Every structure is written in C-alpha cells, then in structure tokens.
Image 1 (cartoon, helix red, strand yellow):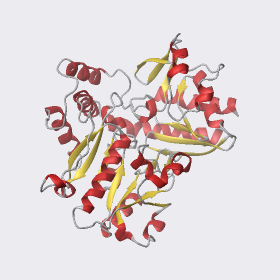
Image 2 (cartoon, one colour; image 1 turned 180 degrees about the vertical axis):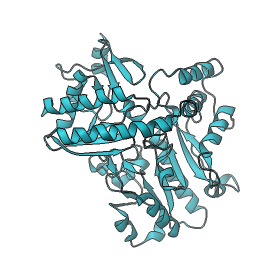
Image 3 (cartoon, rainbow, N blue to C red; image 1 turned 60 degrees about the vertical axis):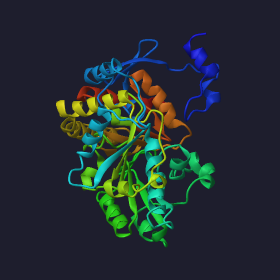
Image 4 (cartoon, rainbow, N blue to C red; image 1 turned 90 degrees about the horizontal axis):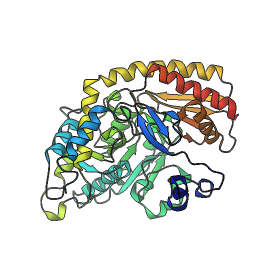
Length: 416
C-alpha cells in the first residue's frame, strides 16, 4: 500500500468527516516538504501556505536559523524531564518572554504542550488560586460567544462554538457566555467569577471576527474593578500576527494569564507557555498542599525551547515586526480591491496579517469548495464555514501576497 492508501485505512484526521475522506474517489493531498511560505505535495506541486499550517508557522519553512538551533540541540539531548530538574534553555526562554512586559507583574512562565493545555493551565491555576486563598466561591468563568480556546475538556467548556462544544458543556466548569461588554457588565453575580477569557483583537474560529478598538482595554478595566482575573488566549494572535509581538500590547493591556502556543516555536515543534503574574504565583507557595500539581511529560522540551529562542532571534535579526506592518498595509490594499471587484464577497475582516473573506452565498460547503479549487491556483488554506481564511507566514513577500489574493479571487469565481 502507498501512503494515501495507508492513511485511509488507519488514520483519523481532526475536524474531518472521515466517510468523505476515506471515500474511494477522494484523492488526499499529501504534503512532502516546505520551503519559505511554500509547501509541496507528493506530485511536486507547490502551494503558498495560506494559513501557516493551521496558524503555526511564523518565518517560513526550513528557516536556517531555526533549523540549525534544533539540529544543534539534537546533538546534545532531545528531551529531559522538567519535573525536579531544569535546563538553561527553558530559563532563557522564560526570561525573554516576560521581557516583553517590563515593570509589570507578569513574570512567571509555566510550560506545556499546545494551546489547549496552555488555557487548561490558566483555568486550573485560576481555580486553585481562589480556592486556597480565601475566595472559594469564585469558581465560575466568563467567555465570549463563538470563542474557541481548545479541545481538552476544560478549554472546551470555554468554547462558544455550539457545533463543536454543546454536547460537552454539562461535563465542564460553569461558564457565562456574553456577546459584548454590555452583557458582561450586566452579569448578576460577578463575585462568583474566577476569571474571564478572550482572544484579543480578533476571534479566530468565529470567522475572523475583529473586536472594536478599545474593547480589550475596557475589558481589562472592568475585570480589575471586579477582582476578576483576565486570561488572554494569544495562541493565534501571538508572535506578530496582528502587527505587534502580542495583540494585547496594542491596547497596553497586561493580563493575569497569557496563553501562548502555535507561533512560540515558529511552528516547528509543539510547545506552549502560560505566563502568570507574580501575585498569582505567590498564592501557590507555603507547603506541599498548595503546590500546582499539573504537568506534561514534554514540559519545557529542550528542542522546543531551542526552536522558540531561535524564533525570537529571527524576530530581532530580521526586524520581522516592521515587515509585518508594511505587509499588513499592502494586504489591506489588495483585499480592498478584491472586495470591490469580486461580486461574490460579502465582507472582508482583517487584523494585521490575519484576514477572513466571507462569501455572500450561504450554500453548504461553498467555503470548502473554494479552498479546494484554490489549489490549482497555488494556494492552500482552509475555510471557517463560508469564510476563507488568510493567515500566511510573516515572511510572505508582496509578490506572494499577489499570488494568494489572485488565487482566492479566481477560486471564488470558479466555485460560485
């Protein structure tokens, strides 16, 4: 059997209708290599990685600095336990991460494996902190309608996408879902809430819904006034996607918990971090019964730390953030023209190099059809319902943006 046949026989893909995937007439696209913003399939065809391999890749595939850092670490040790031991790379990475929030209380880093576990850590810390520091009544959460924070059971409780999470709600924590700040401020019992969580500036799975300017700062002001912890899920928005290293910087907001993953290692290895305030950290001191009993086998994996440090080095060496601002302006210009010229587009939503192109038609699976057609125009991406997602590596060039936008235009016209 070849790879495609073995895949259909044995593999189970995420967010996939497996009966369609394994159908006899379905020919799976098998990715074999990547270079820069391009991916290549088993037939040798090249495609722009239009959604950064599910929102992870930052500087492109096979970046020499990151590749070299991983190879160098492999010559030393691939993995060691972080339970009862430490290593220099994890310490250096923690120091560099918190350095983005100087003169603030956000000075501790807890490592895990992916975005869902980064959120799970924040949830458990928020609950345990309240329980053992004189506020046992604060065990509820606030999240926003149509939010997405991961698929582990705790993180799924915070998810507002009914299609994904409604069947699991009764098994998780108590969560109040609100659409906006007005509904948030109208909650009757804020004294029961441990923490509120939000994807700052833009909600990803909610078809790239962009929050209004100033909303995040108002949310921080309200949570602080109510003694409610603020969890920022920057799993998607972190590491330059919105134009700043972290989205919260654009409104000068310092959260109590900052959840990072995806771009932490530039998309090279699975790794996550939950940044926590020193105040919360101190609430876990004072004896074994107060410790945070949570961890993963690959916590602070040295290869992941090496990749993450190299990722941050590339940001500095290549002035990546300055490039994102210039490219974001160019993408905005191209998408404006696209929206004006393509009659099938309802709305374009954009924040930095993150964009969603919503189609006018609500025909079932039209977004999926558009993305399949886009492959013949050298673009790989995925839709969210009938919104086409654009979220390329930050290293994309103007010429590659042109190819990407043209591919979407042509694919929409063909599919409709």
